[in-house]
Image 1: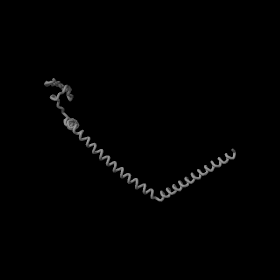
Image 2: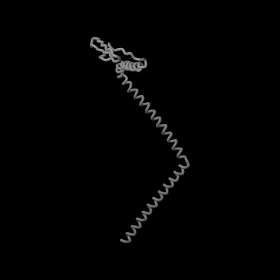
Image 3: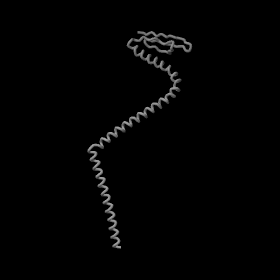
Image 4: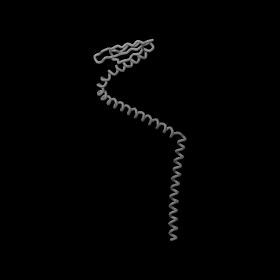
Length: 158
């Protein structure tokens, strides 16, 4: 079976376009004025329409870019004051949280100090300190007595 090839020439102000249609294949140089038409089934048209929709949305949003760029300097000026307000709020919140944690910790330490086991441990600690102080005093007296004994012995020898 032979396939028919048709060539269409279109002349536009800027270019001359040549399009070859060979069965289901279309080739050539396309411009906006000579875009070929395609026969597409309904099942295949949805993805195609989605792609066209994405392209249209991108173009639509790109049109807003110049306006956004023009408003950027005033946005930057207002951004500084916005940042300062947010930093102040964050500092206040951090101070509030710090204060709440401090009160919570103080409450817990107070509860622990009031427990009988803690009271007993503190009493034992104080008693151990008194014993250590007494031992240190006894050691100082022993050293002093030893020094005196050495001096007396050296005086008798010498």
